[in-house]
Structures are given as C-alpha cells and as structure tokens.
Image (cartoon, rainbow, N blue to C red; front, side, top):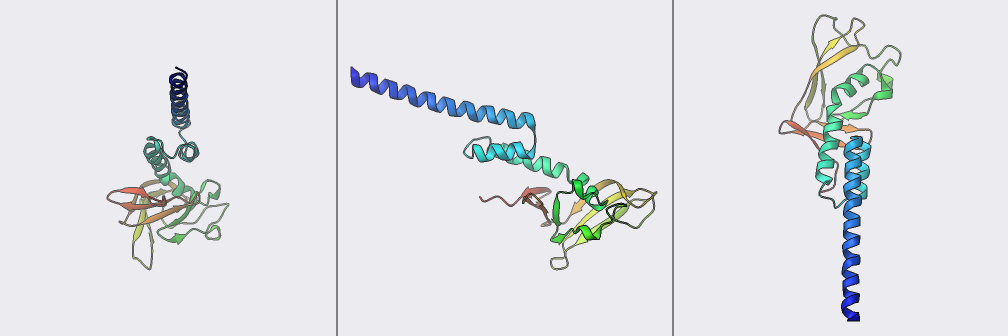
Length: 176
C-alpha cells in the first residue's frame, strides 16, 4: 500500500510540474502576443525554445520587422538616424557621414514626380530599388514600393538578417 501511495504521489507531482510548465509557457505566449513587439517575441523564444509557438513567434518577428521596412528605409534616407534600424542593404553599409542630420540626405528630383533609387551591390550585381514621392526639399515623403532582386539581403542593427526569395523576406540569421 505504501509503494502504491508513493507511486501515486510521484505521478501526481509529475502532472503538477507538467501542467505548471505548460501554463507558464501559455501565459508567456499570451503576454508576447498582447505586447506584439519584436522584443517580447524574442524573450518568449529564449524562455521557451521548445514551445510549439516558437514558429509562430518567428513569423511574428518577421512580419513586424519587414512590415516597418518602408518607414525605416525612409527614416534612414531622410537622415533620421534615431529611427534607423538597418545596418546594410544588399551588402552596402549605411554610414551616418553620408547624411545631413539637419536636412536629411539630398536626393535628386522634384516634388511632382515619382523617383526610383537603386542600391546595387557591385560584386553580385543584385539590386534593391525603391520608388518614392519626394517633398519639395528633396526628402522622401513616402515610399510607394520596394523592389529587391532575388537574393538581396538586409541586415538590421539587432543582428537579424533577411534575404529576399520566392516573393518574400525570409529571416536567415537563425541556426537551424
């Protein structure tokens, strides 16, 4: 009887531990989704790397980072380094010295036309083009579209790397 009672208590303890760990993971996942930030999803991945929700967290990170790409490219090209999060596009590094921090980087064009700018990697020949509407002072008002060649890579300051392929940006810095 004592052995049976001991085994029952051990089984119960194992169930409590499993249930407790599941609920921690579920609560953390709910918090990450509610916060909906790259930092929250990364914290979830670090804390619960074996969770079935990790793939969904990775996709959420990709959508958040790439979803902001037009705004971040615009901020960088206008000299808004405070909001920049891009390290390189297509192997071409962005440098603060290339910008005028008070007026933004000067781009050629007029305020009533749509302009295309292209970043081309001289070694690979791959291009990353943007179409934008400039303001009268030549700063970018809005980016209409971004058109990368297959294989173009964007590196973010946080270490994330994305490569364009099959019609979408894929995160390529993670170890598989």
